[in-house]
Amino acid sequence: MLEETKPKIICLMGPTACGKTDLAISLAKALPIEIINVDSAQIYLQMDIGTGKPHVSQREQIPHHLMDFLDPGIAYSAAQFRQDVLKCIQEIQARKKIPLLVGGSMLYFKILQEGISKLPQRDPSVRAKMEEVAKEKGWAYLHQVLVNHDPEIAAKIKPSDPQRIGRALEIIELTGMPVSYWLNQPKESNAFEYINIGLLPQCTPRSILHQRIQERFDAMLTAGLVDEVKSLMARGDLDLSMPSMRAVGYRQVWQFLNNELSFEMMREKAISATRQLAKRQLTWLRRWSNLLSYDFLDPQLLENVTKIIAKV
Image: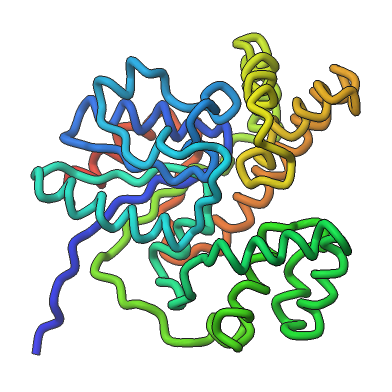
């Protein structure tokens, strides 16, 4: 019996500052493409400069999905992303267009392609009780509680990460079982075959990528990143414990505006943090199975990737 052929989905991956956005825009000008964002910071409203979103004019010409739609005060899980992106793919295909997934949030790509364990939905009442305990005893205390109940997961979470500590304890509270149990359960099946295209520093020295990261952040500062973060601070309902404000660049500028860092130290720390992010992204990519790898500055890059997508 012949196996059923699954629809193919193109995923364009790469470290920050490798040119994913520009390549995606160029591809969409040549092919009937709609872009789906796979960047965990570009989902947020009011965070344009520091996340490197495409210009509004580009987004008006080429449809972009899962971008610029969520308030920075709201957390967004990888499970929510998977649900939303699968819906987007189906809608784009119904329009006879090609969905192109573009970004550097490798965990999102992983959960999309490999499936996710069926964890319970968030419960605001349980989380509120946890926040009260955290105010009284601190997140380090709650991390120790997690160590006692689920040492496997606790070892992967820093005591300074309230979002993940809270979620892990919430799951235990709601289900009576540790997160490690749920992660070992069978995952949802996937209806698609994914063609993964990775932009990496292959022939190009990594130092060139580092230089681009520095130039990119300096351009963000020139474009008004400090004022963007100042506006976010002025809301009064955001803080550095939130996923949105933990994004590279935003945390360091926040600390500068809070008089915790000098301007030069802020700049150095932000560039360093972005380089560390790129290093983690490259580690993910080098371990990714069935990755079609291209040098991010290959002069034939657009031509080669266009040929791949045209065959889908």
